[in-house]
Length: 323
Image 1 (cartoon, rainbow, N blue to C red):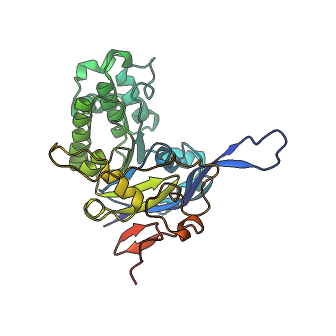
Image 2: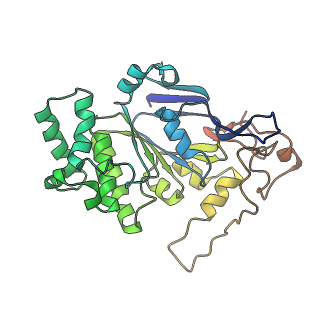
Image 3: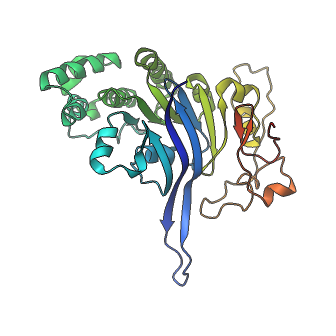
């Protein structure tokens, strides 16, 4: 498969104000040294609990948040060092769909203006061509082209998310970062939007980074899945491999929590005890050690490296690396 992006040792730390008499600088480690590759035409699911760093990762990739350290390589260019003019040009190829369909659209612009704006600002088409493309996009995402002159407040959450998708498609991007695009929607609407994502990928061959906290959604859409915990990727592999053979205790707990459609079938639910540690002061050893039901003495003392088990990467002392 063709590698389209490479994320190397990405970090995003937010500085915090320390106490009145303290000289120590404190940082919230939202994304803490993660690395992964993205391949053309795939959907990489980024999954984990709230506060695991998923959304910060997505925003850092587009430099909507400036990374603290690391490299993001796209088409042999390091995005983290691009100047503003180069960055603007790059963003034509990498677009984002945001979680909140109510906050991601300008209430003063009609939805037609919202979709046509990026096309015209990048000078990709004449106004007439851009208008024709916008009307086509509206229909493609399941909206009537007669809605062009309506404002965002006249639409439901699901319709607004369709508008957001149309806006992301307007520039024909290669990569779309979808940041929990269905979590704010009703369950019945979620299924429609998820199927729309799948249909659009089949039609246009987009590469997705799909961020979600719901493993069942990620399972349906993804080619590969990366599991995040407290700013780190703790496991990443092919979707089928992850569900058939989860290696990290955290991943096992997440999978055990997926509800089964058969009420007669009782699953072995793994209940995690304790709270997620603070990203300001994470545990000294494995970040999951205070909640892990399998932990050994080494887990509380030494931070585990990422291990490769036949293409299945996992960050855990309890898993033996293939030699």
